[in-house]
Image (tube, rainbow, N blue to C red; front, side):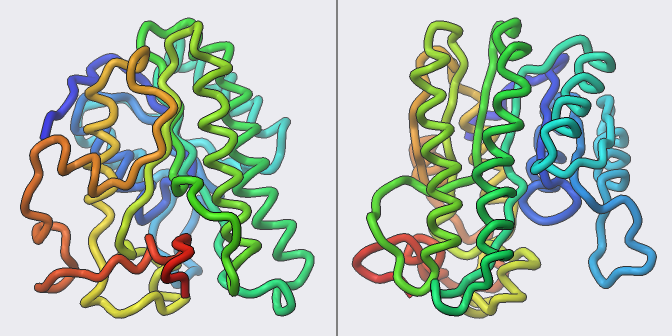
Length: 279
């Protein structure tokens, strides 16, 4: 697996308090990238959820890079624009934007309250739109600009039992892949990434997606993101890829290092958006 040298680069990442977002932030910091850590959690002292944007930023600082923690609701256009301004004021520019923040609710149409549907749409689709849009003018100034989104390939036309969530995640993909064409003249690489297996996160545990025997660690995603960033964004754009395929193409043959427990996990997450085997 190729590890890119991101020294001097700056990444703006949404949803970095824990799980996949935090793993991506730390992986990029290890590669020398400055990190803007964003999310809604700034204090976990009275919560059963460990992790804050500040703790992730501090962990990035400990890796020898500069970081900035910004409390952010990606649904709020003024807050997103302000976060972009703070990023540019602090670092002078931005090179990598990663849309990772996401709401999740696994339910069928009849059982999902309208407010939850609005939340899925606002955080996932609207948030990806607002964050990408806010940084486009700055990414065009980078000689190696990226927009990467944690969302699945658009390969289905229905998802019985979880249509609202599927719609919102596929909306993230649709926006990102459309940007690949819209920004082609600026050589900005716009791609999506998605795991084939369930990843050990709070959402995975809360919704009971299989068991620990089926899960992989968030590092499988962050390693894939690093591999994506080792490409030329002018040539590597418009791709919707599974993280396992990305790593296999980079020469990874043993995925056991990512297993939460010993064994070979089943592709639970991929089945979520698979016409042949959705659950």
